[in-house]
Image (tube, rainbow, N blue to C red):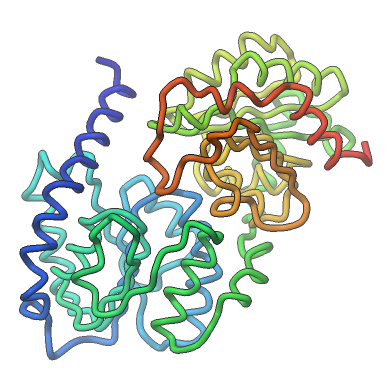
Length: 392
């Protein structure tokens, strides 16, 4: 079995354990939800968000709002893969802990050790920004903080151990939901502030930009005289239902290269195979292959230099929006109301099938044939690109 399929299977198993074991534990612990809390607590706040990159980027202006209003020292609990993102965005001025649920159930001692380390911090407050995961609610409880904030999400049975909760809405942007949860903790509404502060909330490091320029020039980019576009064809492990047709990505790449645009293919380690197929079919010398080869800091620098980004609904979409870069965002099963790129410079290409959108939690796909993504035509995508690139 390949590493990609193995990760997918582990993630699926972890979700099933979270669903069945998690709900059972929440029901059992509900009557005694104050038994493990401390009375002598520190001046520390723990934020919890495991996945993914896009959601953590959306948290940036919300956490900035908390920092401006709270004297609590902020700690962060995330996944190993997101630790670099949390660090770059400066979402913590304390320690950053991580747990990987896809492997933690096979290594329970590591999970117990992390929870014990969290308890030693004696947090005053925990804010759990996960929308569906039951085990994040359990961990917020086991940390021992007397005040625990989180989402009450329909049919997920996850809010029984919180002391304070807000309803997670499927009819508003996720950033708004994050800001509402923080507002409950702060006692002050920071929703509009967070929305207005999103574009520009991330900045590239100048040394990384200069290094990226040198790298791109070595790949054949002609500098500022040549438009630079990012094409991000993958959605990571488990994101296949959100992925557009490979051959159409390749057609877009060829057409843009014929127009004089330099293309950079990006993605994570799980996106390498799909990106290689795009690269092979496109057959252009004006394409640089950066998939699985960039740190988060390098990706920020690269996106900040791009004239636009073409991608499905995945983390780089929110990164581009935060950096103020125009985005053509392809949506099939995902709902733009919840996950659209924030700002005015973007174009959303949404499948027109009557079953769209069907996704609510981020992983609850209704089918496996991806018809909603294949229904998006090449012409629709090119038209959207032309709309945001008319100055060319």
